[in-house]
Amino acid sequence: MKKVLETRTVRVGENVLIGSGHPIVVQTMCNTHTSDIDATVAQCKLLAAAGSQLIRITVPAMADVKHLEEIKNRLRAEGIQTPLVADIHFSSEIAMAVVPVVEKIRINPGNFHPDHQKARALFGEFLQLCKQYNRAIRIGLNHGSLGKYIVEKYGNTPEAMALAAMEWVQMCMDAQFYNVVVSLKASNTVVMVQAYRNLARMMQENGVVFPLHVGVTEAGNGDSGRIKSCVAISTLLEEGIGNTIRVSLTEPPQNELPVAQYLAHRYSEAPAPVLGEREETILQAACDYGAPLLNHEVDDIPLSDEYLKDELLQACRRKFYKPEYIACPGCGRTLYNLEETFNRVKEATAGFKDVVIAVMGCIVNGPGEMADADYGYVGEGFGKVTLYRKKEPVLRHIPEDEAVERLVELIRNDQVK
Ligand code: SF4
Image (cartoon, rainbow, N blue to C red; front, side, top):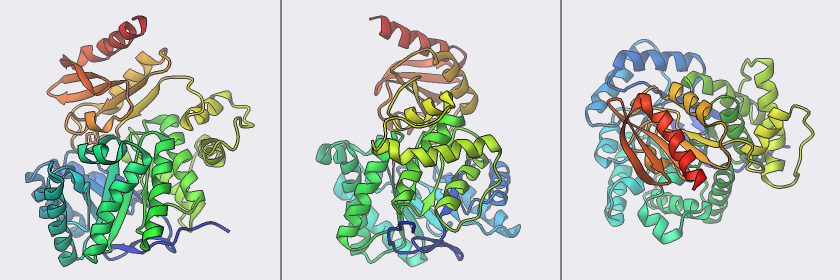
């Protein structure tokens, strides 16, 4: 008998239901520029056809609200009813402007204003508007961008992430607004799993459990990205935690869907994806061994495939056989060819040990999101890159064609010190 955490049900648009008792909902996000309406409409069509039940689109500027509206109108005119989710990072004005436009809005209310009381007031206004339009929201907090107020008040731990989320959850309850999904993503699988467990427990103790959107943020690409996502997400799903999934890969977004569909099918009544034999082996091993490794129930696993074993052990943070990579999936804010650059960085740095290297798509959110990274490669735009050591920018405005080499130099020089 599968465990299920009893949650409320959230309705997104006419037909998408998120919560216990419903199959797990899979979703992804466009990586086109929202101002490029043709490209975004084309990508949404492709993602809807590939089975994405929700499609998220970034709204970085007020001008993009109109673009989002046009995208939605064009999709609906073509009979594509997949609900759209506006991804808002900082601006409460943009968050409020998109409420009449799309079915769901993802926000981190703590970023609405540097003054916490003002952020609370703005979130209160936002909730009233969402109530008026009968919208769904996701309160999305990430480990890397908890905000000064939260870190000062609670620290930077999985417990702090859950406590921070609970403040906004409580505000929703006080406003009697219940169309709420919550996420607490991290790129570190141990932190991510613990944060969601804490939040599930706290919501249960509080008497109202909102559905959870689960995902490992900045998981990277290829086998590592898939394995990292699967070990953490499956560990939670084994415990009945998780109602909608986004597998975040630094690859075309349609590649995320079969992985999310595999998880949704394994743990709920969702349809099975068509997978290649190798991909299925990898995902199955990640789901079979993820929880025992992450929970320290076993120290070793009976796999003869040494590469897969190493990847699994590293994803569960039990052994580091290569650098640990963090890479965002890219979105409409991405300012360079992220996928290609990430592969070049991986190739050039493969020989280093005991380092965490981040490759992030934009200078607005990238530096804040790359929690735990020892080094960061962040696109500034206009062909320039900033290189970070921990959270400090150490080399700015480096031309893109020199940046990978300069990153290698930076790490090498630090390691011989
Ligand atoms: S860090 Fe990456 S995914 Fe996040 S907003 Fe910037 S480009 Fe988009």
